[in-house]
Length: 407
Image 1 (tube, helix red, strand yellow):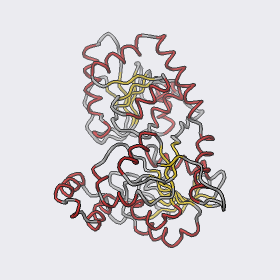
Image 2 (cartoon, helix red, strand yellow):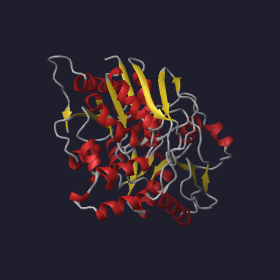
Image 3 (tube, helix red, strand yellow):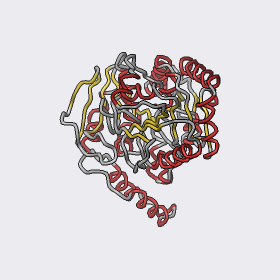
Image 4 (cartoon, one colour):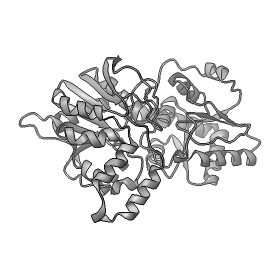
């Protein structure tokens, strides 16, 4: 195996979270051993898919990035469109043609990228599709199924699982890579994937060496103890509930001076409150410095399979407080014994009070999570398993049988 393609809707140093960040991490690790192309779009914002990058081809840290134009921006009211389609169409009335329109509206609609896959798939030994619910994977998978590894990145059960398109697509890849066992079991439950090799490999926290907590405090004029949220500030991440819980916590616990610092793009409104500080989008350096300087990292998201911020906090020894409705985050806390989780306001309040007042508990949690990350989430182990999956399941040598878990 010599050449690999990674298909991702967004890619670049300007995109610091989610699937795009994961695609970049994988590409930069694999390029140390193989020739790697990334097939992506010129979009930087997944809420619009508006073209932003100018170059068609560029080299980023040894990775050849091929960018294709998005021909139309993301449509609005897609949730309503989905609901209406599923309500009006019984099983025998569902239409791949109608679903194709939905996928094109969801985007990023970049047909030149699909044409490139059609004409150049023979140039690659493996084609890795990052994320399942976007146009590049749905349209590209049928063209490259014999060489395809799918990293679905499912954050929770979706009504779109009922689409014929996804029911068909999940049977196509030669192998799956999952970040969590919960994700693997959900795919097994919802799709006909029996017999397809898979690995559950997770991700790793790439913590830089130049973290500057004092520089962060000075730059953003933060002088008080704070808890931090890092990520998209939106309703689907349950940020409004976090705002409600935090403001109620401050009202009930005035004796504990505390701020909530938000780092990420604002999709939903942030309440005006003297103890809530929204910094907007920040650089990777500032994000890691802000997490390192926090007393606690809080993650309110009920569905999460790529807990970048949580993993980073654990690697830095910053205890985490997460939404217990999210199985992935709850299991991280239980397995590491390095964080706490809540399922209602009173558990949120009690956990935060423990973290803010019990130095012995805080120190033990910090030590536990550092050890847990060091033992279980290192890139060299992840990439070694990844390469083994690709070599045996996708491009097996003659006489070599795959030695993997099967869905």
